[in-house]
Length: 351
Image 1 (cartoon, helix red, strand yellow):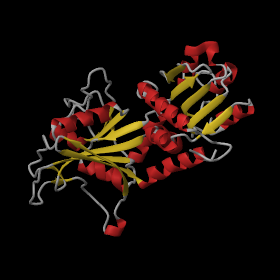
Image 2: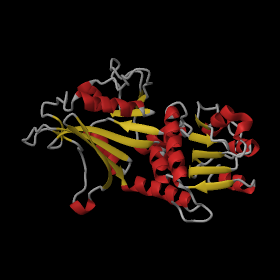
Image 3: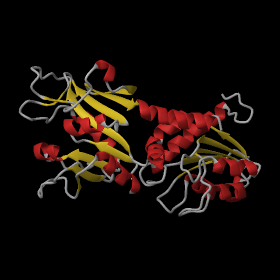
C-alpha cells in the first residue's frame, strides 16, 4: 500500500486493478495499434462492470464500462490500466466522458507515454475535482503493455527473438536438419507467441532450408504479416509475404510507422545475431530440448560476429523459466527494455 497522501491506494485497489488487467486481455489483438486497456467500475451500491478497448475507431475500455452503467456510474470508482486519453483522435477524449458520468474516483495503472496524453488526462480529471490515484500494479501493467510502450517511446515494435536449441546450443545438426528439436508442447507455445505478434521476421536462408509457412495454426487466431530479409522464392510457403533488403533498424522503423506493436523474429542464427549485435532484442525466448548433438559441427544459436570477451557479453534480465513436457523455455529481457519499463513505473508511482 502506498503511503503518499496524494497518491495512496488500498488492497481493494490492488485487487480491482488485477481484474482490470484481466479484462484487457479480451482486446489484446483487436485493439491494435491502440493499447489494449481494461477497466472496472464499481458503483456506489456495489454493482461491478468491466470493459476493454475495442477495434480502432471504436470505444476505449473506460467507455465500454461506462456504457454498461449509464447514470448508475455516478459517484462510482473507475479502475483503468492506462491513463485515460485527453485528445481528440478517432474517438472523443475519454476524460470528458468520465467527468460527465459523475465518477468520483479514478485509479490508474500507468501513465500513457503517448505525447498527446503523457499525464494530461490525469491533470484534467484532478482539475475537475475527481480523486485520481496512479501507479497501482504499475509494473504488471507496464510488462503487459511493453509493446505499446516501446512503440510510443522508440517508434518501433517490440522485438521478440525465438530460438529452439539442443542443450549444447545447436539449432540444427551439421547436415542442416532441425526438425524437430523441441516437442509438440513447445511448438504449441511458439504458436501462441506468433498469434500475439503483429509481424513475423525470418531470413531467406531459413526459407531455403525449412520452407516454413510462419502462419498461426490455432483456431480463430489471425496470422501476422510475414517479412523476409532477402529474396523470397516464388513457390515458398511463406507467401503472401513482404521482402526487405536493408538495415533492420530501417525495417523496424517502417513497421512502427505502420502501427505494428509486436515483431517476432524466427529467422535463424544469422538473423538473430544481427538483432543481437544492434541491441535490438527486447525479449529472447530460447526453447531447450533435452538433446545433445556434441562434436561442435552443428549450427549455433547465434552465428556471426559476437562479443570478443566475457566483459563485452550481451546481458539480459531473467523473466521466467517454463517447462513443456521435458523441454525448457528460458525467457529473458534486455537491460534497455527493463530500464524503459522501470522509467514508466517510476513516473506513474510518483505522479
